[in-house]
Image (cartoon, rainbow, N blue to C red; front, top):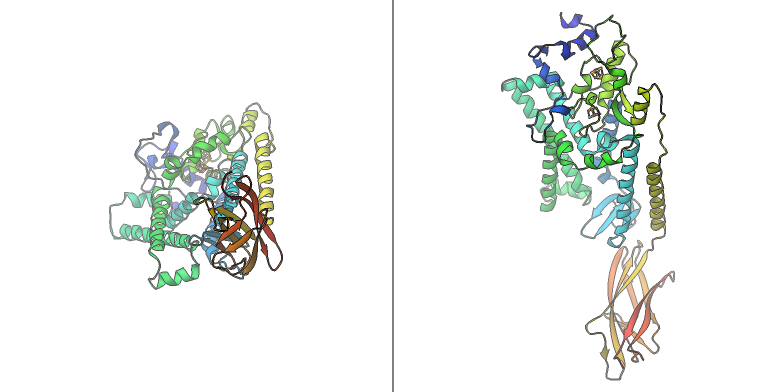
Length: 503
Ligand code: SF4
Ligand code: SF4
């Protein structure tokens, strides 16, 4: 039958490969074996040779959602280093990891090495959020927003644009090398490499003022470290997103092994509703739907799967829950006039209940979900409090240990201390240094005529301080060194000891 006279249903039936004998083409240049799941559950081996997957394009709600998330995540990644933020002094890049000065700038937040606990807090909250979403909706992170998924999706979109959709790509891979094949492969890998270099390039902009670095790159004056990291990230993006694709998720990533422990019977997972789909069989237009399932064995859910698996085989570690098989199956259900969601987000609890003819509503509020939620809430509040209550002035004191003290000619003893004063304000500040706890003592700051230390805006200053006074009665005495902002009288002190000879 000529293609233009073929109805959509008949076209689908042509891909219903169970009705096709092995060796017979299901489409021009495409054999039945090409339509079987590459990573079939029962045939899977850790040591098997990789079979190439040619995912077909899916159309539907989840595909649209994935496009949207891809545009948003890539947009955030590529655009963020170019956002500016006026801090008065210091760099005006909104997000900057300033390694030489050991500071991390994130819009109005500026994190110093001493405040690394804030970054730790953000990482812990992110991990808990991941646990929470995994418990609720399965591998949504893997399916929609993991960088491996996003870049692989982008690379497959490029491949599809240049080489065509699934069947065209299978045919192209089987075709002997000729000019057309060579030019398509060359174009595809060239675009992949451009994307990879842009990805590596965007990454280094997070570590140095982006406009300055761009000029340095354009004029071949960029530091060797920047070039090295662009090379490393370009290579890893090209290799992981373009060449290795699903292999990264199946064999390299530990997360699928861990998150299996986070699902429970109430997690919403992409599931084939076998109760409704079985017994599966090919279906011809006009035939009855009595005594059979809704699955027509068209394998559209298989051919769109980027992991090369068959969702009808049940839950599998390889499934990244991208939901493209839902879109594919819903399109089929619409064409054959059956209800949607033969494959859909489903809980094990409802799956079991449906076998008994019952319905079990989704339980979102479960102990583990509540625990994750409470922990995220408490930690977030703690972080907000820590951010709001952080001081613009910090003092730390290091006491000299060698020698512990020096006895002067007038019988007094002298102790040495190193003060580290951190001024996080965006203006230069002068601090008066004073001591309490040692009577008749004198304080001197090396290099200063008065007991005053000036610290530049957003800077750290070390000052060597000598305190001399009568020897303490017990060989040591508690003492506090205090610094006071001479402008607003803000004071910070730290306790230390004043030592002399043991009696
Ligand atoms: S589950 Fe849906 S898409 Fe998959 S083979 Fe059956 S009918 Fe086709
Ligand atoms: S089985 Fe479905 S949800 Fe799982 S990876 Fe394949 S297409 Fe995505």
